[in-house]
Length: 285
Image (cartoon, rainbow, N blue to C red):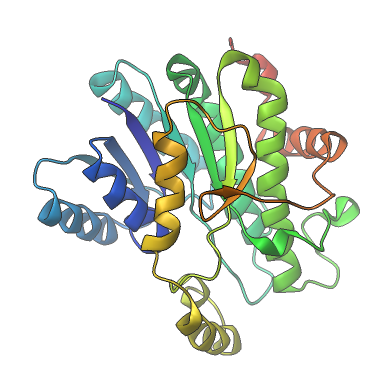
């Protein structure tokens, strides 16, 4: 039985992907921000697939201590149910912010949740991914194109712009995937980025100001159902042989930003390790 961990698994793309993979017989571990949302999501999947194997955990992944706590719970769950092997990790949790807001560590929240949470959770689960020769999937965005990592001010303290922060975080997703492949493809681990396109979800309505909330409410009406990108995640999860590409949209490999270089990926890896207080080199892989 294959196993999958999905963050942001209580609504939108994460919930729909969880539903699809549960139907395919995956042992599903979902992570959501509140107990109520986790219970609602679990009930929703069970109502359609009563024999599904599901376990939900609650964590506010924007805070690193919460990532570390839930990672331990997930490790225990995989040990009990899947012989400590993880086939797929889907780093889907993300946020949009209207103003400059920081985590307890002092990190800008879009950078913290959209990138650093995935970086730290992947680190904690990487030995289990290695055991299964697993796959790591990031939820990206076409908005990673036409931007860069602001190395001198990665938290954007000066002249904060929420869209600039979001676009930078999405570029970090694909740089992280590139960095993972450079380091761990040799031990059977592969990383990918899914561009879901414009999807009718509530990401722009959560903890945002009046203007962003209004703009997103109008814009998302033109988006596709979360069921559409869910097929892309399922495609990358179910292929017997790991696909060779890095960046996928509608189940097809697509081109990506020229900023996605080994030099930038390595630079982001070093920075992210410092911000998380970890070193991937310490893992016994």
